Length: 129
Length: 129
DNA sequence: TTATTTGTACGAATTATTTCGTAAGTGGTT
DNA sequence: AACCACTTACGAAATAATTCGTACAAATAA
Picture 1 (cartoon, helix red, strand yellow):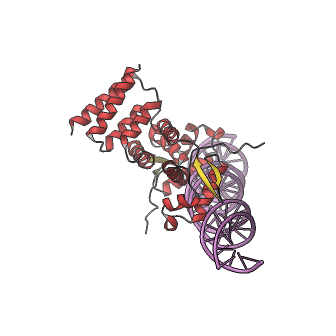
Picture 2 (cartoon, chains in turn purple, orange, yellow, blue):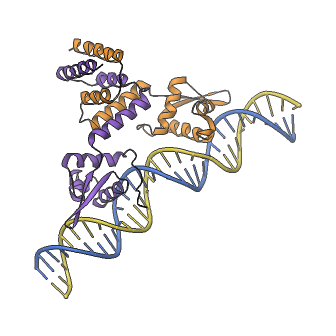
Picture 3 (cartoon, chains in turn purple, orange, yellow, green):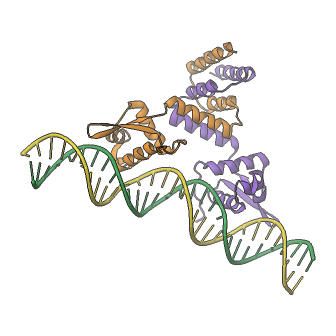
């Protein structure tokens, strides 16, 4: 028996750590710790503990490199993002992606260029139908 | 001194309760409880407790009506949604709303009509610039 | 070899979230 | 009044998330 606990959605702090891993690739605890602001924001062992827990949860993999461990995100940023978006659509937007889109564009000041890019993207989607 | 704890983002369960309140307007504990599936999904006192906690946190207001309390969401669904969207844009989409939009439209099967509506919305936004 | 540095493992404290049992209040019936 | 149905209040347990102290291991410097 070697099955680990199944991966649920990452918690806040786990997500913050994942960001570092996504951005910098495989990292030692030290690197993650420093990237996250060092001791002023989190104790070293706090980050270590999280990485260990995340390893248990199959959120990250790890590999010995000399005497230290290099941790690596298992899920891609894309997958995780998609999962979060799907969830928010489901829980607050009655399953309607377009509602979320309106909300995303509504408040925020998207530049003319961004709007143009989105329009183009929609054109492509429509072409597929 | 009567200041209550300041409102942070609602938790999962709090959000579920807010949904009922948004949909049905001011509700008694009983109504919320039943709307959420009754005892099969949550004990009555669990919902009661949540409503009380949410009252403390200023997430809901309440008013005596006869012998019971009617609870009412303070934040609108719109505000809460916006807040959640802003946050997700901030934490996983590098502050880019359009990235979120792509992600939202990407996976999900938005209908031709929905896409049309979004396009129209973008037109309006562009008009304002 | 002893001390220091650098890293891991473990255990536990703290805080937040979720859950519910039990007691107690209120109003209406009989 | 005594009873009943319904509701609130309180306290506490169970679980999850966050934080860190301390001990131990290995490599290296003195």
